[in-house]
Amino acid sequence: MKSGIESPFYVDLRPLASDPKILKNLANYLLDMLPLDNFDLICGVPYAALPMATAMSLESYIPLIMKRKEAKQHGTKKLIEGIFTKGQNCLLVEDVITSGKSLLETIPEIENEGITVSDIVVVLDRQQGGKELLESKGYHVHTLFTISEVCKMLKEEGLLMDDEIERINDFLAGNVVKFKEEKRISYEEKLKICDHSVAQKLLNIAIEKRSNLIVSADVTTTAELLNLVEKVGPHIVALKTHIDIISDFDADKTILPLKDLASKYNFLLMEDRKFADIGNTQELQFSMGVFKISNWADFVTAQVIAGYDSLDCFRNVGVVAILSMSSTGTLTDMEYREQAVKIAVSHPNVFGGVAQNKIPNELLLFTPGVNLADSGDGKGQQYNTPEHVFTKLETDFIIVGRGIYKSDDAEKAALNYKIAGWNAYEQSL
Image 1: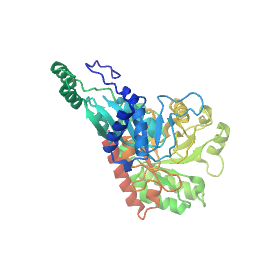
Image 2: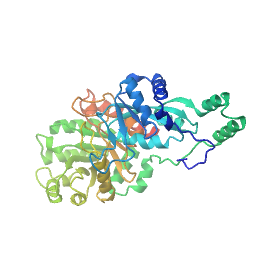
Image 3: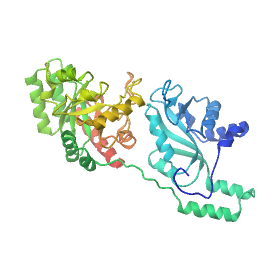
Image 4: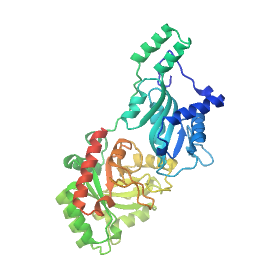
C-alpha cells in the first residue's frame, strides 16, 4: 500500500464511477450524513473520489472544485481548478481512508488558496488510524462504512469466509498505520536552528515574556504611537510600525522615546516597510531620507519579487520576507510562494517570513490578520484565530492590529491576545 505496509485486503471503489445508479445513491447517502449549510464548495481527492464529489455536487447544487495531483506546467498552471473565492468552506471527499496521510498532504494545498477545510466525508474507513489522526487535528470526519461493517455484510452474503474475516481482524488489531509526522517545534528548539541574531533575540523574548504577540501600530501621530506602546509594551515581543504614516514624525521626538520604551519593556522594533525595489534603491530607502530606518529598526519586512540580490542591502538588521498576503485576490499564488521561500531560506539576511501557510522550520513564521472576534473587515482582509494559525499553519508569531489599537482598552486587549496566543502555541506542540 502507499503507506508501505502489506495488507491481506485491498479496497477498490473506482468501478463505482461506471454505474450511474449506484454512484447517485452513494452521493445521496454521503450527503445525508452532512450539515450541508456549512459548505460552499465540494472537492474530491484525486482520483477515485472525483466521480463521487461530482455526483454529490449535482445532487446538492454545491459548486465543485477540482484539485490536480500536481500543477500544470503550461496554461494557467493552477493546482485548484474551478470558481471559488477566498474564505469559502470546502467539503473534502475521499473514497478510502487508511493512515490519513494523503489527506494531510491535500488539505494544505487547498487551504493555500484561501479556502477553509473543516469537514471530510469518506466512503470507507479501513480502521488503521487515519480518522483518529485527522480528528486530533480538528477536522470533522464523516464515514459511511468501516471495514469491519463491510466484512460483516460480506460474510452474511457468503462472500467472505470465517478464516478470511479472522485474518483481516488480526491484521487490523496490529496494524494501525504510523507514519513519521513532522511536528511543529518549540521556541527552545527553534533557538538551535535559527542562528540569525535577531531571531535569537526574538525567541528569547518570547520565552521570557511567555508571549508571541506583535502589535501593528497603525496610528498616525507620535502621541498616539507612544501612548499605545505604553499600554501594550509589557505584553508584546515586537512592535510593528508603518513609520511613514506618522504625520508629525521627528527623529528626536518619535524614535528616541520609542527606543526607550522598547528597552524598558523588552521588545523589538519591526518596520513594516515592505521594501520592493532593486537593491540600490532599497538601500537608499533603508538608510537615507527622513526616516533613516537603518538607525533604529531591529528588523524590516521586504518583498522578494526583485530577487535574491535585492536583499543584500539589509545589513545589521533582520529581514522578514513577504511570502504571501492575507487579502482577498492576492497575486501571491503557490508558484510565487515556492520561489519566494527558496530565496528566504537561502539568504543570510532573512530569518523569517510573513505567510498564510506553513513554511520551513529554518524560518520563523509571522502571521498577520489574527483576530479573536471578526472573520473579515469588508475591505478584503481575512482574519484567522490564534488556534487556527498555531495548529494548522504552525505559526511562530501573531500580528494583531485593529483588534488592539481600535479597542476601547488597548492594554486589556493586548493582554487577552497575549494569553490566547501563548495558550494556542502551547496546545499546538
